[in-house]
Image (cartoon, rainbow, N blue to C red; front, top):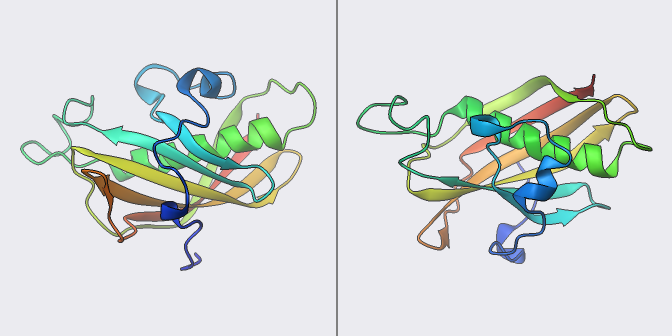
Length: 166
């Protein structure tokens, strides 16, 4: 896993909605509680970079049970959120034609959780395309937390996510 930051999040407008939830739904099959991504704040098609936003709320479906009395955003959902950002970028920008096949989760490598993500806050997850083929892809991913408008400098999550067209 690269220690170099995918994107300086201070270099983008984190309040922008570049891709809203309705547009995400055109490319992502997840619905209900598993539509974990709120929107994309930044997309750079040529660089293969996208930044997703997830509001971490104390009334989220997972908060009561993970961990009672001290809710923490589950690492598995960080991976899922990053995978949804990567799946959107791959489906929209890398698949030729009107391919309506489902993009499935192919795996995760080099995953590290480097901080606790507790509500209320906003999580920003950046992904960068590392490799894309006609059926499979690999993206680097990292996550940061913003509290009360201030982006925290510490990376709380990093991984490589892979997907496959099914």
